[in-house]
Amino acid sequence: MKFYRKIKKQVSPENLAETVKENKRTTAIVVGAIFLFLYVVFNSNGLLQRVRLEMQKKDAFERIRVAEEEQKKLKDQSKALDGDPKAVEKVAREKYGMVRENEKVYKVVPKKQ
Image (cartoon, rainbow, N blue to C red; front, side, top):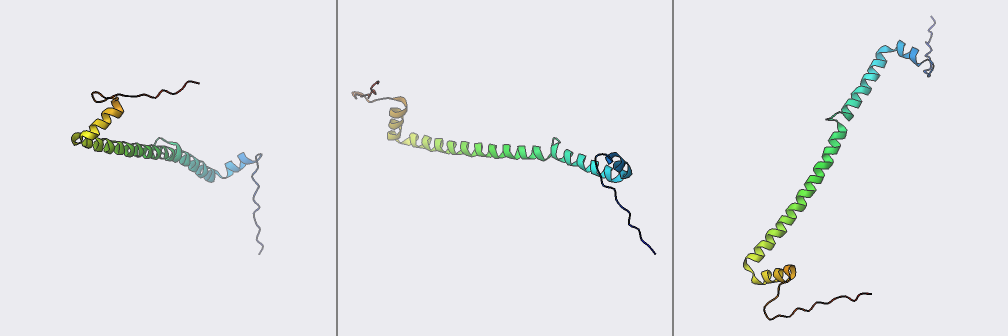
């Protein structure tokens, strides 16, 4: 009893169409898998959109954290200004340039070169 091995043809650009015709089922599966992959990656709810949304979420949480820190700082400053006359005077002098009565203010002007 002799067994003969079937020799497979090498796929080349010249005989690609013939190979596709012979292996219709395999070709259909490969093409379907490619379309499925492209759909999963590039559709409106795909992986790329998911990554983009995750980055936006991370940025939004960072902005929220910064805003909460600023809000806490402002609340602390507000509490300090409510009961402490020295804190009120400090803000009035630094921020608004106010002075007490009969007080002289000296400004240092830099030399022009």
